[in-house]
Each structure stands twice: as C-alpha cells, then as structure tokens.
Image (cartoon, rainbow, N blue to C red):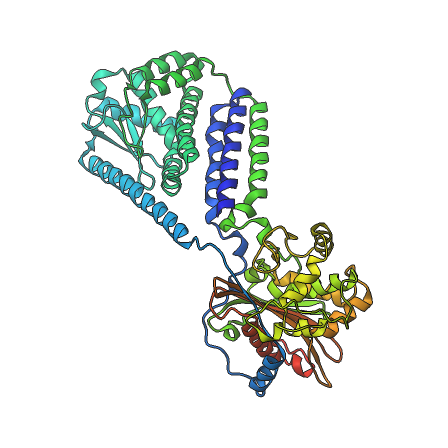
Length: 585
C-alpha cells in the first residue's frame, strides 16, 4: 500500500505540473476543468481490482473437499515419508498493531468527514424543502428564456429562499436552482440573465456530479494534503470554465457587464456549503475570475488539438502506472500470465479452507491448466524450492559434486536430520538449509545475482536478509515456477547437462513402471507461524512430461506438506499418477 500511496502522490504532483503548463500555454478554461477528470481516475485506481477482473472464476473458495479417489490416501501417506518438509522460522518485527492502528485512524477520519458532509446535505435538503416556487413573472420568464437558449433537456427546478444571499445550484438526480428572495428588486433583467446562465452552465458542464465525486474522494483521502489542494484548484477551474461558457453565450462585448455582476457577489468567506455551486466567491476567487475575463480570448481549433494531446498523453502515463496503484500491488509482486494456451479450472474442493493456486503444464499438449489465476500470477517467497537452483549453481561453479559430502559444522538444529554430513541427494531430501547456505556463502553476491538474473527468477531480487530465498527479498509466482522447471528439464537454462541430471536425480520422489514423480517442497514460517507453502515439480509419464506448482498462503497449515498432499490429490484425480491426463470438464 505504501508503493500505491507514493505513486499516487507522484501522479497528483504531475497533474499539478501539467495544469500549470496548460495555464502557461493559455489553454481555454474548459480544458483545465476537464483535466480534473484525470485526477478522479488516479484516485479511483487503488480501489479497482484490475489484476483480478477476469479472475473471479479461479478464486479459491471454502467448498468441501471432494471425496478422495481410490488409493489416494495410501499414495499421500507414501509421499509424506519421502518428502521432509523442514523449515526454520524467520523472525520479523510484527507491525500488525501499527497497520491496524493506522487503518483505524483512516477509518475514523472517513467517519468524521462523512458526518460533516451528511450534516451539510441534511441542511441543504431542509433549505430546499423550505424554499418556495418563484412567483415573480419577470424571473420566471428570464429563467425559461435562458433554459431555452442553452437547450437544456432537464431544467433545474427554480425556487427562492431566504437562507441564501446569491443564486446557487445543487442536486444530482433532481437539480435545483435557488435564488434569494427579492432578487428581482435588486438586479436588472440583464444581470439576472447572467446569473441564470452561470448557474445553468454549471449543470450543462456536469459540475454538480464533479463536485460530488470530489467530495467523495476528499472523504476517502482526507489525510492527503495534495487531494485537498487539488479540490481547491478544481473549484476555481470550475468557475473559470463556467464564466468562459457564459461569455461564449452572451458574446465578448458583454464581458465587462458580466464582470460587474460578479463583483456584486464578493464574499468575505464562502457563504454557501460545498454541496452548492454559486455565482459568487471569495475576494481572491473573484479577482482570479475577473483577470481571466480581461484576458479572455475565443477558442481556436489549435486549442482543441493541444488540449486532446495533453489529455491523452497524461492519460497514457496514468494507464502505465495502473499496475502500481491497483490494490497496492507493485509490478514486481506479480507476473501477468500472457499465454493464450490456458484452461482455467475450478479446483477449490481440493484446497478446502486453504487460499491457494495450482498450475499444471503439459509439454506434449503445450497447454496450461490453472486454478486461481490471480494467485498463480502473484509472487511469493520461494523458500526451499529455490534449493533446486542453488544446487544447480553449486554444481556449475564446482562448489559441490553429486557425490560430495559436506561436513556439518556442529551447529545444532531442531531437526536431527540436519545435524550430520550431507550429500546433494540427502540435503535435497531433508531440505537441509545449512548445505545450500554454504554453497551460496562460497560465492560472491554479484556472482549469485548474475545467475538469478540469467534465470529470470521471479523478481530477481537477492538484496534482502540472508538467505534471500527464505521469506526475504526474492519472490516468484507459481506460473514462473512451472516455466522455469520446463526450461530446466529441456536444458534451456545456462547449466550443463550433467548438473541438470544430478539435480533431477535428487528431486526424484517416487517411480513406477508408468510414472516418475519429481518435486520439492518449501515452507515459509514467520514468527513461528506458517504463511507460505509450496510444492513444485514434474511428472514423467509414458508419452508426456507435466510440470506443476501448488502454492498455499494465509493460514497456519500453509505448508509444503499440505501443498504436496493437495497436489497428489489433483494429479490422482486427473489420472496423471497412472500415466494419463484426464482433464475435468
């Protein structure tokens, strides 16, 4: 969310700079007014699930698990004996209380500002309810003439009230134009016409809707000073656009008379609520508007061209930053799957209460089978699944050989399996952290970064806490796990065939006459709580090789062991463990 907030702040700052540039090149006021629609887009993006619009069918639900296929329990038990899903807990400063506190403050602020707006709305509704129909024939005649002149299909209801000092307009679904009582006694017909045109132009330019949207965003972003400043700028641009639209209607020769009318409504402070749009304004606002009238020039075709070019260019910049704003997800935390050869499946029954995803790729069919598209594209720490590539790098660098036994340094672990010397096969089977950490310690960080970059491994970041693959900086998505395994199997990665063969042997879990199952689990434990479970690998059948990645997140049983059991159930259901691929319709 911090990334989204920073990007949002940067984009709002860019909008301010572009607006200033538009003023310098003297673009018409209507383009400054329209420009604020882009601000609404920016403020809305963090709340749009852009990454998941087409993913709803793949979300993991809480449905009951399907009954196991015959023999599944036996196979799962056998696999549990082969896979040692061992992991150590990573200690992190728990800032959950701070996040909860900040969320509470934000929510409290929204409640307070919502109350203020609702209070103003209730006062406005009470004022409208007390207002009466305009009886003066001159006012009614001039009003209807203005409505007809502007060609308004839905005219605001004209009312008069003793609660206001200048004409105001309000209402979105049912628009109103309120005038103070005695207006006809104080102003000439020409001045009244100018007032009506100004207020009706507000409706014609959709300003009440823009104002309501601005208020809504100000409630949501009450903590952000740039949003408050933007709304202040928006108010003056709205009035400038309205004034310019009136001049287009009454003619340039009447701008002095129109300006004199505005001068009669100078307010020491804003006399009406933020829900009303009035003719007048503060002294500073009126000065700005009069200065704009003095320098007013008629619109030219080149102005429209410049306006559209600026509008489209800024819109493109916002569009390109959308992934950084949507749901607070940075580009590095997600790898969008762009392949068209995918069949999206609903396998929630296999995951039970787990939040998880599953990706399967058939090399023979060149086809993906994916459950939970959003989850399959989300990047997570690889944890012990990175040991596949750590082993490859160690073999490639000559740090270890397939039959090399590395001595245990005597540092006691909670797992007895770790407290002894290990070869590559035994270290992979028991997921021995110290074995792979030793490989990485014998290399420079730059050398390791080169390998990770050549592999295009996830976000390619190894600058976090050591080991970088254990709930640290390095992250990868399930789809990327599958693609890397496929490249590894087909020798498309920068490793020698002997190194690949040695690691493949170390990953072998079970072999029958029909299939061979290879895999590696990974479990992320933070503050003694499992948060991240993986099982990745591939299955060789008589006529195909299928690559898979299962990921679990968000609950205390999000472990590699649970992921392996779910994977076994899915593979068995598809008939893959007996040599076939029966895809559920």
